[in-house]
Length: 408
Image (cartoon, rainbow, N blue to C red; front, side, top):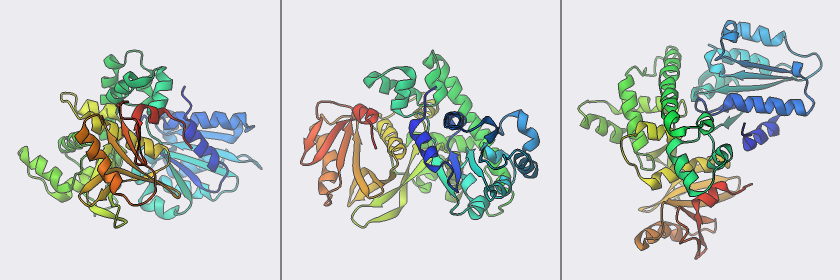
């Protein structure tokens, strides 16, 4: 079992603090396993078994607790007198009105509360209102490339090619015969998300008449394939609607907006806004969307070739998130900077390209970085090793080395 070291550090940082720890992320990215690892960490620090209460609502064992009042009473009856009880509620969004139980447990003395969910609306609506300022979110992602290498005991360029094809879901990394087994598993994850999470979304929409329901699964899948094929390219509701219309079906931009939201909420796609580097402001048009796992992308686009550079860009985006950066796409005049990444007072500009050996590509990637007038670090990540070095203060770094380096 690969230890999710950075995530465990984050949980330990917030341990015993008076906030709810909310672990979010796409299904099967390892949320339950992370909780198990953290519980073992608690035991090693001296916490007794009786102080740990862990409930996974995907298990039939806890079907009777899929009522928020029953859940609340069950947890209250097991709190330890005079000691902290560590309460873990896994996939809590399966409990209707769970936020009422969570809010009531939060205000109890000596309760340290951890919840997980596979849908972004876990932190929206009533829960966000009830718990405003009283929770921290830890967004869990599938394995990074470095974690994948440790899990499969592989390394180097060949390992990255495998990771690009099959992605970083922990179970995929554990398979003996990845090519023969992974695609079936990935199809199962995708269909589970589409069926289960969209069904949950419909039930939520019953309480919000202003939100349109997502009922056309064929349209939803067509949009997801379009977004998977557009990774690294700016998209808008209009461009998606035009694509759907070109295939013989008319659909409004407002419908597209709601269906894209349905794919963002279960963490299949992550939207990234564009940032005007000169004007220091976010732009409203033509955001990019990156897919949580390249294995899913391969599943959706199995019969077509897609750009190596965009796949690498997808990997880099999520690696920056793992390293704690807030990430936007940069715009400088007519030029684009792949990522403007900020963390605390630090900022870094990042370009991503498969190769820098062609002179025209070299100049294209370097030009936006040269035009930036501040002194924050500027780097280009590439798969080639021939152009690695420093050019006028701009560092060209091999992507495999960068993805596997240690970082603060």
